[in-house]
Length: 129
Image (cartoon, rainbow, N blue to C red; front, side, top):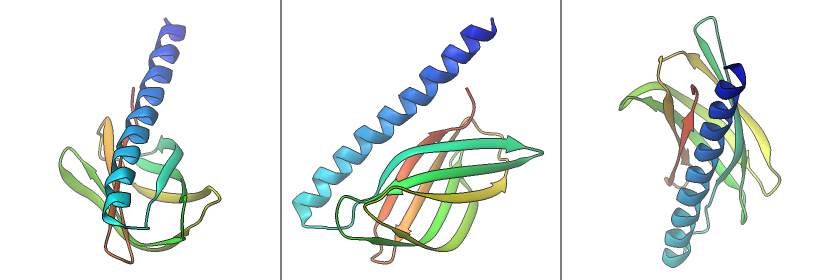
């Protein structure tokens, strides 16, 4: 039974990765078409939930020029559950950026990054199998 649960959790994480990848590719095509140079990829993520607190490690990179992220917000079940001003610089080399916030008791979160130029990059993240 435990092996089945582990396999299902692995499938969910893999599915989430490919959904994010496909969304990133579609967003990239649209931005290139409009001549926008700011692109951010979510390479992978790690999530832990302990004592009612979610710690989310995002591994981000950009294929082009550096992108400055100034604001991050997290949505669960259509509601903003966390909002934070940040000063992150995303470069071509994948780097870890961490968010910590109260557990919204949701299976999936939408993380939205807002760049200095005003562009939004959103990623769906599954935190529970």
